[in-house]
Image: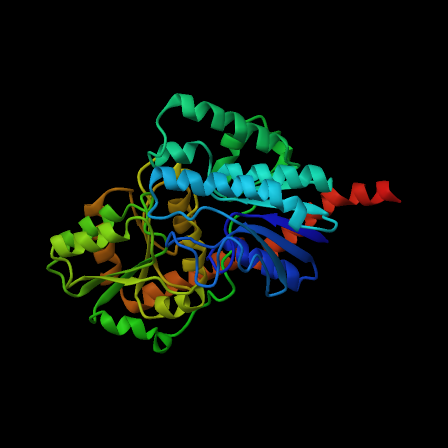
Length: 413
């Protein structure tokens, strides 16, 4: 099968679509990715890349075709809009020229923004191939949730666009079951909506404490709680720091923040101004391959989201990685993410935006015996294998693609 993946983001940026593309190649498929010049999350082009540099390359057997984009910069509203629109434009114009050959299926990896789906529609029409639309963020609902857009006049055309993109897709894949009613409300028939959650990179495996990353030598001994991933508005870092402030005198509880994003500078400033440097460490961003070693050296992994009805529908992608590494999980979130932690019996949860409850859950887990925490991690790993394993999910995706392409093959005979 020949797949064209349309995704604004791809390797060396760290996103779940990297693993999907690579594993599809390992299963014997031909995969081409139409993506932008890498600049996430720092907002500047990765070293060695530019508008007209390294526009074609190969990674793990995946053919990569890059089109120019305006870099995100410091993440201002207008700079992000320029970044999003530039990809939609250049991928629509240059994609048909640069992505030559036959395409059996087009798959769009729809992180924010949904407008990257425009390029996927163009490729679908020109290649006469069915389109699978993999929804990671609900639009325009997620824009409202993070306060990016408040004007009804701006939301209305986005709603029309999303409705058109969904309706033009043969199947709409949803990363959370809770997305179903929202996608259906855009006029998509129930039999065209399929549950396809995120999978974790194969590098996420349980490792012993002895394999801990050297960077953790910066963290004093104690009960270590790690937040890993995007440091942005949706991830509710204020609640984490407020909980850390409540436990500031408990030097036996150490908070570790790993990652990068639009709020990193704010977090750094808060650590200094709130005098949290003795118990909170901001270690920076690491390659995805090194994350399991970072997880190996901590006692619990932390996942947080702001209190918002739309965010409560989402399963944070980091949750699959946490489960895969067999570590106890502390959640400060509502909805689907909290439900997964509870179903897996893999940790403890507090409501979103409740620092006192989060602090209490941290102490609760800290006071558990090591054997109980070990059992939580093992249950999480078992839940991951049963629900989010790559063999299971990629087999499901292959089945849907075969379902869509078989009639075309018969018609061609």
